[in-house]
Structure formats: C-alpha cells, structure tokens
Image (tube, rainbow, N blue to C red):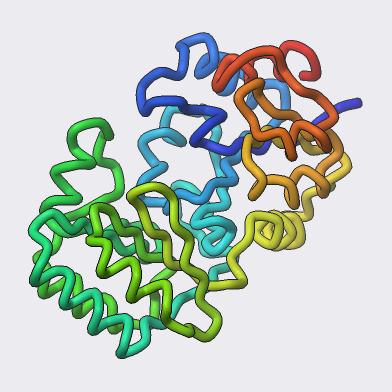
Length: 264
C-alpha cells in the first residue's frame, strides 16, 4: 500500500533524550518528502517546545500539539483547531501562592506557537533544548497571562507536595490535571490526540487509510485505532503493543527507521 502520511509521537519515539535521535533517522524522515510522504508530529508537547525538532525535517508542514489541543501549520502558523483552558480564580490563587513560596517552582504556559515560562523554567530548558519557540517572563507576567483566554495548556515542575495535594482536590469544569512524576500538566478535557488527528484529517482532506502512526504510550491508542498502520517501538507500553499492527524490535528513534525501511 502507498502511504501518504507518517505521524510520530515525540517523547518515547523520536526521542529518548533530547539529542539522541540518529542522523540516519533525520535523513530518512527528510527524504520522505521526495517520495510524496508528509511527516507530522502528534505529541503532548506544546508547539513552542517542538519547533527545533520539526525544523530538521524537510517539508514539515503541519502538526498536532498539546495532546491534540492545538493543530497548526508549521511555517505560517496556520491555525486549524484549538482547545483553550480557563484558569479558575481558585487555581490561580494556588499558582500565585506556590510562585511566592517555592523558589524552585517552574511554570510554563502554551499559547499557540509560543511557550512562555518563568526564569527558572527557561534556564532549565536551556540546558538541553535549542530555543526556537519559548520565551521567559517574570512571575508577575506569568500570573497575568494565566488570566487570559488563549491558553492551550499549563506545564508545571518542582511543585511542593502541598500544592499537588490542593490542586488535585479541586473540582474544575472542562479541565484535566495530569500528574507525571515531578510534573503537572493542565489542559482542556477535550484535548486528546485522536480528536486532533480527526480535525487535521477533515481540514486537510487526509485519507486515514493511507497513514502510519508510531506511538509508545496508552494515550496513543486512540490514534493507533484510527490509522491504517499503527506501529510502536520495543519500549512502548504493553497496552499499545497489544493493538499495534507492527511492534518493532528496535527502541526509540531506531523504530522509526525500522518502519520506514519496512513500509515506505
């Protein structure tokens, strides 16, 4: 079968660590454009923390970011669809208190194609990531941004146990709070990767029967069920391995090479 689209998750597929994707993988991804195949990300990452990666892929045109909550073109920032989150007064109060009391508290706000972050988060990102789409703000400016209506997601690291306990007790309308080790991810409940893919397919007239997706976690299962060929690396979760059409014996970005060589 002729496939026209290759969709990739980033963390756990394209990347293990930020800089360990092989040159062979980048070369093969860029070469797909000449074969009439488009490459797109489907990722929980915000746009502002992905552009340094998509810039490496020849002909990269459009992607699905913020766990499906922001779907946009690459160069001209064409907005295809988005979900926004409204920060409640109670949640804003808790964030303000944590910023005052916790000098290690990192907070980032995804707004369309820019990722705003406080100084400590900005410095942390700079230790391992090329800056193509994130910018620093003072804590006061971050709080003001949290009151706006164009937030796609909020990212938090190094929060205190007190903050985590208080936030998880909140009842928030149309908001999902996800915890992962030392990180908290706040986004609209409607933001799921498969909804982002359906929105993109409708807007760009993409035939999902001619698409491949490579994912690695349970949050990728919805997308895996929509595409023609679903694949995953050896480091993927057991649940997605059970439903994938192809389970590579390779890990992380080497699995992308495996899929391209085998199917494209």
